[in-house]
Image (cartoon, rainbow, N blue to C red; front, top):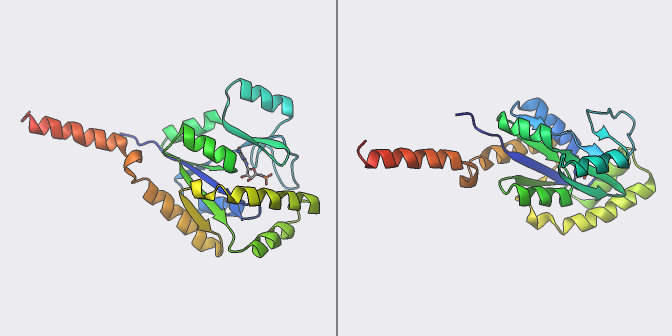
Length: 210
Ligand code: 5GP
């Protein structure tokens, strides 16, 4: 019996290092698939359409919502972001653990629809470190950085809704810690219902002496 994979949401403050973390996780272990989101935000230098995001205009995004093509979507700092449904469903059915790197509103929508989703929140060890990383990557204006800091304060309120908090201090340790959490999470009874049903049926057969 082929086992379905599980959905794993990774959220975190902008600048927490989620992108690097997820890339390293994918490189090191082969049981993961990464969902590529759709967004209306502008492409940054070095980003590729279909690799980092599917970059679309507002009209196309709204059409996809109407066609029920997204598992979740949210507005973040003035732009839409959403998770295309088809790819995720296919990968889960093929037994892959699918990583969604999304913000908190989307994470909570996903948990509501799919309660067996593992919600992970990544944070740097301190606020100073967060600001250093945001400034160091040189991809946002000063104004955008402060917008993202404001958003981080709001997001902090939602952390208790997550299943695990992961501190991204040493990158390699953090990657292994993420992998261990996800591997362990597979064994939660709610994620093993098929196995439980199978054993129960077998026990019933044995008890009838068949
Ligand atoms: P960025 O503009 O820095 O690439 O992403 C901004 C925020 O949007 C990040 O917190 C990122 O995790 C989140 N995000 C990316 N894709 C999605 C998505 O498909 N859905 C939701 N809800 N958030 C997303």
